[in-house]
Length: 338
Image (cartoon, rainbow, N blue to C red; front, side, top):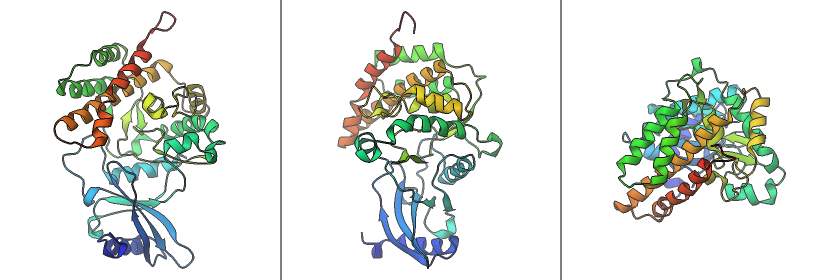
């Protein structure tokens, strides 16, 4: 659809002129391919001096489906969390404005366009990022340490998730598919036996902090993206999620995002004031994260078998067997101990 025929042009043009001082309109509105659950659009705010590159993050069709998962926060809340994270030094794309009903665009917000790359294949292999790769794991630790310092008193209402509640939530989802995976059941048993105590201190947790949701440049991490499943939980969950095997994108010997070591991640976290890392808790969340991905794959397979014949669902659905291998490697005794 050409920009002249796009029904978003007129209301977004008006909103940009309303919220951004000196803006005379917009140009180059383009739908981007990224964004699995939200629409992502790029455009320029035109000013007398120079265009300002911007990103619109918008609910599909403008409005969130009431049937969506309860783990996803609203776009208005997402924008608020990005602002709070930026206040404590987390690299984020600054939010320019949050849409309201009168703007006629739907639910969403507009933020600065941060240049860089999110495609893991390029980040892990292209020469452009060769100097950045050795620094990324430590940078990720430093960023998470800052994120976990966000004052909880400033947070909007968020879901609270402890280790035990997460285990039970995914166990119920697993059972609903009625397709037994003995390795998954072993993992659920291990998780129940090793869950952190409910007294564990909880912080703001990004929830999907991983390679693919980080904007990377030759200098390193430039922005943390996709905050839609942020919640209050165990900070060790963020340190573990970036380490699970699917987010290494084939570089299995570099557990942190396929580009670094846990030692560098943990060192960056502690040096930036994130507190002492508890490896046992990180392992718990890494096992749970791996199992969660396996259950998500089961969901993809179930959707395919129920009639959604997309190649993507079939391909991801069959990957539950990969997570069984990953779980066995994680749970295998080492030196006589778990």
